[in-house]
Image: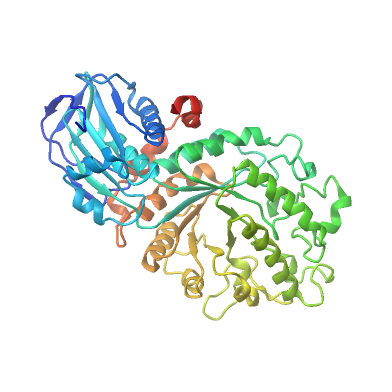
Length: 503
């Protein structure tokens, strides 16, 4: 026997439920299934069990139901990895088996419901989780329990890499970060980039964070939360511009305002690291190492490198440029990339310093860009082609040529919009048309304001090329998942990773 069959009442047919992102292949047989005793998980592997615990916890939060023993009146949720014997057997008997087998990638899932039962089959735990996120949207509260919509679904994403970039500033509440990670999981993002600025204490360089900043122990649960939701957790530390550890408009420098003896590490105005001073590498490499340890040997690291505007002629000194500024920059990039190559970690870089300012085709594109004497755009060809370019633009609402510029030069590219809906739609649609690596949705200093766009960009990144985002109602499709999240006492889903609970 593959499935434990638990009979439930079948109610009259209803219209297709609103699912965001909408599934790729969907058949709605009609009718809905009533259950009254909560969900009963059926799993065999530790990976299946961990995903099941997440789904059960979210079922309790969203629908007020508990995990129940199997039996009459319970909904049995079967989670099966396709590589296991039970997963293979279940797939052989599934209505959507043909669509599933031809679907691309390892994030695909099959979800089918029947009286008293929901079956999710996937290649990976991440795929199982995505099926679970869809399943939770098929459940509705009823007078004496819950109903489950009848469904036969096969689903997979269009863009392979779908990340959310979150900043932790000195006034950032970690509950807000937790809420954003939970929302990203709801919209099937698979990566979170955390840029901690001057808000994370460093054991080796305590001068780089304020006294009342967060400790690694306080940040760790957020990293574990992302891992419990099967996301890549990616640390970020800017290694050229933004060296002040603060935003430019603040006129603050987290190090030099308190410890002027460190001035040689920076250009004259303190905004960028001084690339001719070899001491910066001990500083940067120590902090890189701390972040790699904190994030438990991540596969990616974001180096920033944006808005290094100290080179724009604001200073007369060439102390930090050297006799040949391009060689200075190329050497800097080689050291950074080499550090991470040695640790088998791939790096992201923001695009803007590798675009010529006032380019005749690309235009004026950011506050910085490449200008003499560095002419940093001429160093682009010296970058290894596995460096990932994060192409950011926060105002374009039409086709923006920069994404294709880097794509045509052979680099993996992620499109990075911000909080404006039309900007995100244009950027993600271009990403899908070009078939680039994916999305890095940014939030910067407006995390709460950006959350609806996080949902919109996530849904668009998942769906096929040509999908019209306006077919999803804004209030029910994007605002409701935000409103469903509590402001405080947010789920601690990282507890599902505890070894004692995975036996």
